[in-house]
Length: 484
Image 1: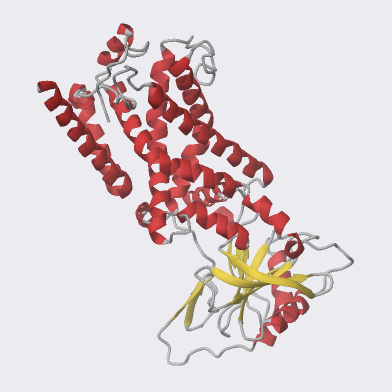
Image 2 (image 1 turned 60 degrees about the vertical axis):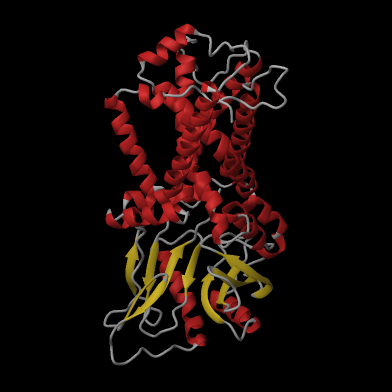
């Protein structure tokens, strides 16, 4: 990569007023320029892949509703059959599998999902039998994944976006993209503000949003690159933050931080009074009692479902929900609202199946504020918060991000030397020495912040170190050539 340019200077580099502004701001502009440049060149391919797969992921819930219409939808016809009758019909089709949960039909034209634990499936996967609630007849079965109950097509797109179907090694790509996206975006915002502020009327409300149509060539590419970047930036920052919560390395640090600050997602308690089993909605933890609780036969649990569901609805669980079926006699049913389009709360109750008593209740209003924000952010990232509108917004933002990345590479190509003696030339990097020219009062906090970010988000730290090594090596080679 050449940092010396033998081409005629462009308007940007020959502007003495701009050079004066750069020096007057203690090197902040060139430092942001150099960081944006290296991250853009080396990390942008990962972000581009994430944007392309993310565009497909954004509309996957709608695609799923179309391709799996026969499993998900029925024609309303009279009154729905009792939930216990629907579950009994589903259990008869899977006699060797363990019944673990039931998701009653949330709308009049939806099917009921009866969920089973299948040892042949992967992590977070369950076997679902879909039942027509009006006839209590199964209409089919399939594998569902995660808290949103994604079917195989949406799960395939999800994993493509998450790890390119390469497993744990593939997650590095998505973590690198999510970890650097906010850094590149904020550095670009600094550059765009510095560029536009000196050329537009500062009193205009749209001075950052409207590209300058009078520009040509590389300046035109830069104007659209910056303006589109500002348009999509709020959503991009949110997607970057929520994407890191799913990552391997940064995600572990985020989880630990949330635990230390008591921002973790709470769970309803399902252990009945006096029970030796400590269980929350999501798993069992057996205590140290001498006598293990007796298992309850499945027909008994199925017969209790109608009463449990009625009690839960009377206590505020009025949206689409999932009922966890306990396997032990000292554990209550957990009824929790599902992650579905248009659902903004996750209320939960625990109900004693034998007596119909509510043993614990967890309202979404009682969640810690950061747990709520995390849940909303994940809902938005998955395209489920506002339904189709949410998905279309994400699709438009991903297309915008792709445009920004393509324009960024176009600007890099347009910056290349154009002398005829150059058989092959690529865009030059911004000028060197930005950190040396930066005031110590600014440089020290920036280095400290970089160290903190590098520790908390390891892939940013390692790649930033790699950029520094490359930059130093390029500088040494260039200096040696100049001396020679």
